[in-house]
Length: 82
Image (cartoon, rainbow, N blue to C red; front, top):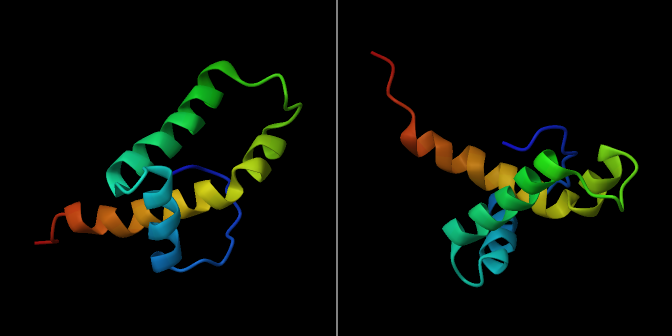
């Protein structure tokens, strides 16, 4: 999950479409590309942004879509409680 991302109110179908577009038709590639944007910013920052909130604002739609898809997919890999 990408932290501190305000919700845009999109549903899972819209989020899946956003992430898939980012991956040029591949959902997993889209997840990886969006996560890479966040990881790169966390490692190196970006001189265009004075505050983290400005960066998050610019990518809010993509990051929220990522979080929605990630949260939905993570349920597939949870172990069932015994």
